[in-house]
Image (cartoon, rainbow, N blue to C red; front, side, top):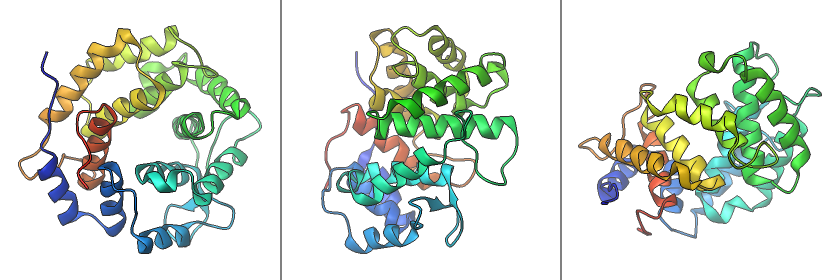
Length: 261
């Protein structure tokens, strides 16, 4: 069976042409460069607040979602994944957990937003700090309770992250029925390139069960088929560079593309 392929050269050229300096540094990290641009490292360091979190817009109060996003960016740049900057960001996420086990940014309301933030935070900790299982387990329990009775109403990204969380301890375990149900509910959905890349990245980060191998190959094939003639991937919100970086991250994670720097 032929595995899906993408045009890496065109994708690289698209990001180089349309991305910011941070985007280009992420691209270089995803494609194998191990010496990030020092000016970009300083830019990221300056964006971080004293509490370890990152704001949505600098300057500003630290945000759980923005901090989780920056942690992923740092993971795109391997030398920064274990840097003090990343450690402080992870600690901010852990400290921001509510008493009931959920996460919510100050000034944000609504059950859907709380479920999404909790899914992002638990997933981030599960990947970045698995040796501190208590906040992960408490967050996973809260999320399970919030979604068990309303899976059909949850947004796609929350379901993807929830399924990933429940696929392994301490959030769940192999064969977790709720995780399998979430994956099954997503199989036939029309997923955006960003959602496809997110789902595939969860497989890379947390491991791929044999029963989901065919699903992963199918999703890779769908993602590959969405690459545009200019090398990028579409995004409804205009975030084509980020969607392209997500696709490259997913294909690199599955070993389908090699170092290009």
